[in-house]
Image 1: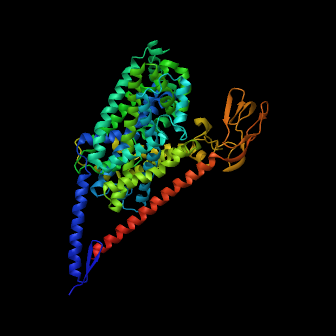
Image 2: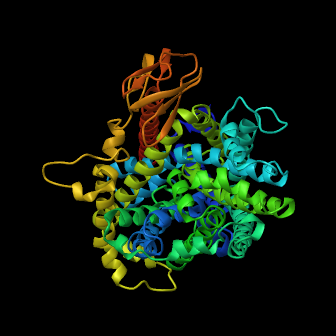
Image 3: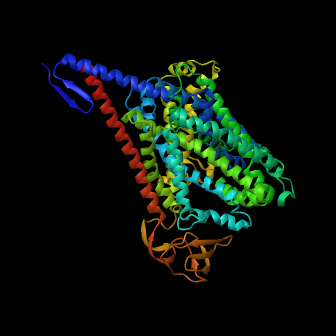
Length: 638
């Protein structure tokens, strides 16, 4: 005689044979449900997969970072180390991430921790895989904020906001937009509203899944992105001297950009910049390529698909990305002035300069150009943010068996709170900390680890078979040796050089007796090198970082003549100046008095918070793994 007990949806019986039958029925239903979910989450077509993968790679860096890197590292000569890095670093890592993703998908895993675990049984690999979720989620936290800038600027361009503004007014508009206390439109708190709209938009698409959400968006966004890019490139090529107020003409920019400075090829800085650009532009080390690849079918050709996606990204970056912001800016300001502007990076040119230049083209063409440029940036940002959202969403669906909709909206809430510090404390260095530790260090470290695992731990013979399983074309055998020796060594060398980079990238300083590391090196970042005189969390004074004579004092700022330049130092809110005109100051001299919460406090708290995020993620992985093992034991016992 059996007694029936009900616990949630499972039935437990005293009779062991009935327990076995009930367990079998439940297991079979679960398997069927999982198979149905996996089938739902498959890619609908090859073109959809390729466009989504290309959209993942094509991002803001293609249009705002690549041309600046090329200009600063030898012009046309930069393309030589860039293409070499593409073949020795970019393509091999694409093959690694596509193949490990496909392998994980064949085992029923779609998130980086379990994908790496499926490639090698040692439990350490799933914790290394946590870096794929860590860096992608935190990159998305600040990336979606930038995405909201592009949407807002596209709207402002269409509405003619920048028409009639001076160059200075357009440049200062960006600062006003980032100030949450100032509205740049009829909507109050429009910066925050646009930010929330972008988060909701991304989550809404994610909730629809791979085929009905991400793939459909990629099929719309990528063609639109290319059309916008071609329109701007044509306009750039036709911008002659005297046209719409252009003083020099865009061809001066094209000539400088593609005129090779071959002496730069002997500079290690150029090669490191090329390797870094290839790595970042192809979205390697973020876990998203693996997640996308885990949904491809068993016999799909990852060689052809990965090559197509990779070369699509290169076309967009080299042909379109290089032909917009730099040539157009040079057409108006000339090469020397724009070279100085590039020291502030591509974002300065893109958001502070181009809207003013577009406004010189008349109301209609200005609106079209603004819509095309910022629309192009928006579409590239959306396809990328969807991709880098996937690792955490798939972790939720795989580990906690949540449906796609629930996992996506919970992810959206988490993303909002992770992104909030970059919005509220943008000017305190929080944004830069996210970018350095998640967007540079973590993703490169993860890329290096997965390369070592694939080539040296899992075994390249096995990896080579996975790469070619179902392939319609065979890779040249040289790639096998590149994967085994060249790519892992390059990754290690780039990581080590980033760790110990000498001051000002001057590699002639390297010696056995030691050298001074650069502020941007990993060691320099960790030790707060270059933080200046205001190095304590809280202080009663705000100190000068410059040597010179005070030439102006207001309630909010102090002007210091440093000899070669005049520096304007903004004083913290609530402090009172303690210097007067004519005073001589040096680093460490007090400029104002009052309670000061220095930027270093926000920087350190951000670092601690990011580390806690990684620890929490590893703990979650531990308990999920423990739960899965216990379930497996119960099934085997039954």
